[in-house]
Length: 148
Image (tube, rainbow, N blue to C red; front, top):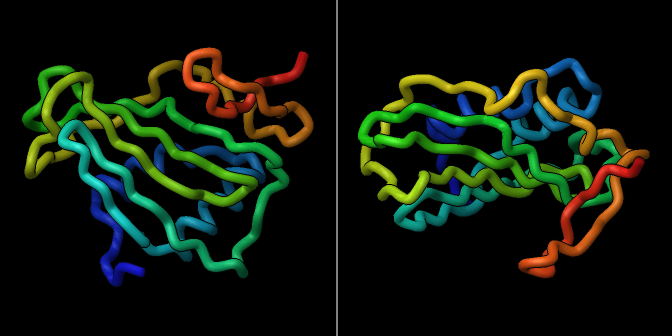
């Protein structure tokens, strides 16, 4: 496990991704507050930060792998901005992805602002009784799908 702390950018993105009064968001915020980064990968056009979450933290009843990815950013050094996706696996925060839109990730990126890609936010995937898994037609990867 890494002994490092989260960066200001990671903390800001997570705060916005997990903003809301839903019980699921409250539990995921508690997980984040108790977690530490376990690994970081830089891809050239973004990053992956993996979480080490203590088993004592509360777990929402989400029986699927969900992605919360409605946060966009303006960063210094990027013409087209960046986006963030939080991966949650069976109710546990797993990984934060930061990505650009076909530009190299700036070495010393400074956050200018964060915003939601769409309001109101679509949070149906966080309701445990409305999620099920379905394979992506392009990648075969299992993704959550809201039930009718």
